[in-house]
Length: 155
Image 1: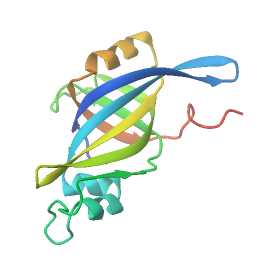
Image 2: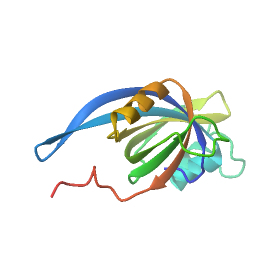
Image 3: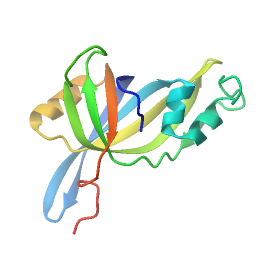
């Protein structure tokens, strides 16, 4: 989703669910995040997102929009989570996260924030506890594209 490392994000909520692969039931967690955008971060989602939310010449917030939803069609990502921006090692890593729509809302007159959801299957009960503990707190995220396995069609 983003190429920049350690993006400040706040986890707004989590939902628990399941999916089935063959006869096996796989636990899922859907996390909702909020990120305040700069024109550069908006461009990392896509150039269309950047040019829609910000003017070309001055990189100021487009005043003709209050909110907009994008189908970002982001590939499956590995997300490294840190508790502080200067932390050397990741607190935990989510191996495969599938992202849905990106909802942008103008903040005051000058900038945007985006809210997006990512769904993953926790690797362990400990990782699930880390995700739950992160709810309603700020974290620093680094995204990396990976080949999907969990979200690819079952063979």
